[in-house]
Length: 126
Image 1 (cartoon, rainbow, N blue to C red):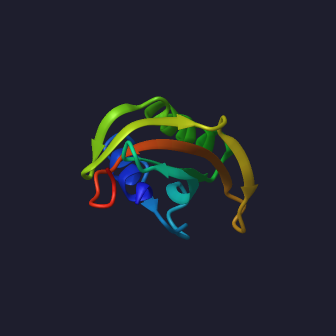
Image 2: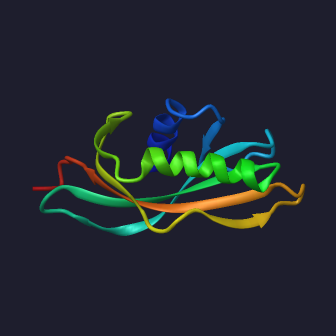
């Protein structure tokens, strides 16, 4: 799953706690990586195109923006990296980071979506 690999990668590069697959209630400042639908795989050449979302929550607009901008700087156009055994050919942002909402505790939530190209060798592929 791409969210776990990206969590592992970001954990090496950012000071903010990074989680995957679920949004946690605490701490106030947190990065969450969520999987979502991608494009169909290219079976002939062993590529998958999973997508993921980076969601950042912090007490203030500036803090949330700084954290998500830092994640963007690390991830945008990352190429030919292996994370947790997954061969990632490239990571591309699908748009700029944007403010999504204020949560129930009035903390600011930003998010940004990314697409990846992943090389997967499996028994059912040529």
